[in-house]
Amino acid sequence: MDNVYVLDNQDLVEKIKRIKNAGADKLHIVADFDKTLTKFLINGRQIPSVISLIREGGYLTNDYPRKAYALYDKYHPVELDDTISIKDKNEKMLEWWRTHEKLLVESGMNKSVIDDIIKKYPDILRVGADEFFNLLHRHKIPLLIFSSGVGNIIEGYIKKDYDNIHILSNTFNFDKKGYATGYKEDIIHVFNKSETAIKNEKYLKAIFGRRNIILLGDSLGDLGMVKGIKYDTLISIGFLNEEIDKKLSIYMKNFDVVITNDGDMGYANKLIEELV
Image 1 (cartoon, rainbow, N blue to C red):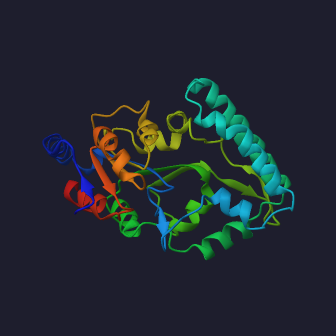
Image 2: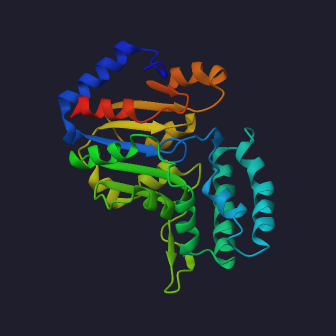
């Protein structure tokens, strides 16, 4: 595969050997959703975030886009500011997400918005993603999917009700008329993913005794998804979707495997088949 890069092949081989020897019942998978399990581009154009699609789609009240942009302008610089501590960023991101959750509810967020987005963008999952889900389900390997976006969208794209998949995201409750009343669980944002995972009892029960992990992400920050989770061996796979010449070196130093050019799930599927 011309778009697959490995800095230390010997180390990767040793990790694969250890996980294989331990067996599939000692393995679980942790994956980001946006730009990891989903494509980065469709027809040469970057796929917008779900929130962008909601904001630009004219689904909600006329004043929703203006208010949502005002929140973005206020909080996004905080997210990017390296001089602000993670603790302070965490507090501000939580404030942003809570305010936006309330705004979505007040602006008429409803089930038909979710359904329409899935209908308009039916092919956002990476090629081989369905095989990935089926493979893990067949071998009873837990998969934790992280997203600070809208969990109902993820559920819609996965299509099947897999009992081994755990989605930690901002998933709406809806009333009898189909309108959102708020999120089901605590808010997940870009800086509290690992904190949320180690508090989720259902997920912790599913991975009990599974001390080996395959992690999939598209940013260096995604490596933090396993922070607080005890493990013996970790294989990390990074999807490098843009600025490849600029970022390849640092990605290769941090991820065991780097997949460029908006690649498919072929490598991940082949790896799992080898391990089980």
